[in-house]
Image (cartoon, rainbow, N blue to C red):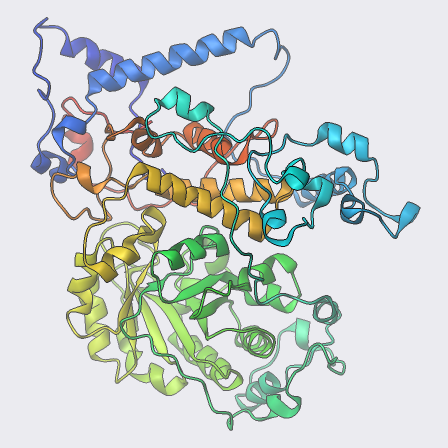
Length: 639
């Protein structure tokens, strides 16, 4: 369940449509539509009756779309004979399959040196040198200007760039159109919208250099500060670190004797008070998205959760999570792990190599893969382990150490209040508390009363609250108690990133559909800067855009709400927007999301499919009356 509502079965809808027409009487325009109170009682957002989609309308809409799809399948039956249609199913692949596919892609991908002009490796190059074959198989160019050529005058991707034909002329012949607000759905989806080239491209910060990566993989990087504190606390290292460390290379150690000054260094300070904090969000909280939030006024950003062991092994994909954009002026990284020795070493390495303002330790992740290894929320089962981790990491950092945790592991067994009074003495600079247990995941309401209770016993430790912040009223209510230093905003920032503007300006922002589409265009431009303008970069941008849209479509425009503010737990009923574009952006149909991505990033590759990786439980558990009570005449799914 991606939170957009549950689609009724076709047979049920048809039966209800037939029942609605039994008496043969013409019903008033808003007849059978629930009131705002009815919707709220059923767990739905109170949308104005004039915008609600009735069951009859939903039934007719589904039948029309189904008929259109069947006609399309019939027309393409001969062309696609013998081929299985692509399905949006999650395919689990073995490591062997993944490696094989990676090798095949490497053989087909054009040599990056050749793409820019000439390859110095000649016949010894492992990559494809068949330019004509590459151009024949290459996806069509995108409309608009190349972001790199527009800024630098040349593109580092050369022939591989999806704007290659625009490198000389500055703009592709097929310019597309950006004026879609007045079009109907079918015309909108046929439009190709050019992305606006950036005015400047700032170099990202926190790269993994090849020398350090080589030394990490060969286990030749020393961690003097960690070794000293682990020995002092009598903690044995894991088997990966029991070998004798080689001499540190110049690339792996900075500052000479810095590591030996375990307790003598002056720690930098950070003030979290009254600052808007974007939660570290796995997958969807990537750098392009954080830039969007910075545009809307967020103060503090944090990288996606990175596994400490992968950082120490030099995994490029894990180090990529630590990158930051120059616009992120208050930036931290979040580490997850199960053992004090690996967390301590990873923290020391980050402190030595990267530019960060604080390091956060994840003690609230509910994912089974993390918890079953002893990390994330499972640490809450052993408070003594939390103390050990904090005491091992604090001495090796020059920047503040923060912790993020849930209120407990099991329902009814809250634990944070039992040790919060001691957390500051462990060297922790701030503590974020999510008002749910690991067992709850994202169901039910966040327990803010418990967060306040913990803050009362924090003994001067800054406490940041987290959970269900969805409007500036929510922010005012929680910060106004005077017990919290600030709040952290997570899923609501994915649904409406402009929540930071709403909080700072103390108003409900009735953002238009055109503005939301422009925001998605900006995200795509950010994505091409971050992941590249070649086919790989375009498809990475598409995948993460679709992941974001699995949250973004849940937003209900302020102008359609009968009662404000909307709450996180309210499900959006099926509704018509004020324009076809607004209705389209509210669709919970994955196929519509894919078509929107094609408007911005061109056609998808053959056999493309998408299933959201993040399946939030925010809307899954509702009052039991929802299934027992009659739904009257309104649908429960957009699309």
